Length: 296
Image (cartoon, rainbow, N blue to C red; front, side, top):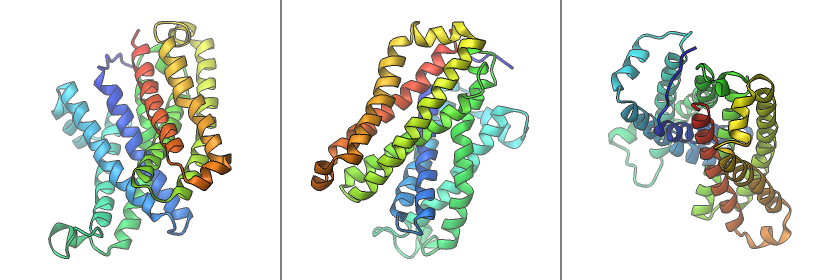
């Protein structure tokens, strides 16, 4: 293991990468298991995925000040290095996700039959192939960010086996939230938003369970590290920002969203928007707290 002093921009990168890849694989899964009925989710997820992770990687490189390191890891693959594996995962997702997004862009009204986008028009085979490749790559990328932290010597990061799983589940929740925001912004497919809310409520329950297991493990293996989160300098952000804002309140809102007859009849987009914004805020604060509490 090695000690790394991660700067503030890393929290932004971890958040954006998680939202981007999760929106992508959530859309792909929805499209696959609905036999194409939710193909719009796959399109929106593709549009969100690559830009978010590309911007996140760019911010990461600029903040670290070592852009050449990325190419060194890319050209010299080392399966035992979490950094090397991460660079390859990010690169693979950007390539496959980018190709997938081009097949969607080629079908938009502004796209013609010639030029770059014209090449990707009417390519369902390429779209399906890149979706099937990008989906597992995205899942691995979402969990990889937690595994990367766990490979260091920080007691908070390395004393629990649940960090990668927590980041994966949290990313999935934020990806679903991002898709709900897109649908609400476009004021379309209210019924699909309801389905996404139900799925996200289940994901949040899993996230709460995994978070509890992580804290219990830390309590036994690294009690001082757990205390920093639970009752130390980051306790207020943890309890109010992550637990209340990012988990409990969105879960209550989504349950209300699921069972309110009045809400369904009026097709009120406000409730899912509120839940989605809270989830995204909580998802960022989760990464922020884990990142900086681990460096104390």
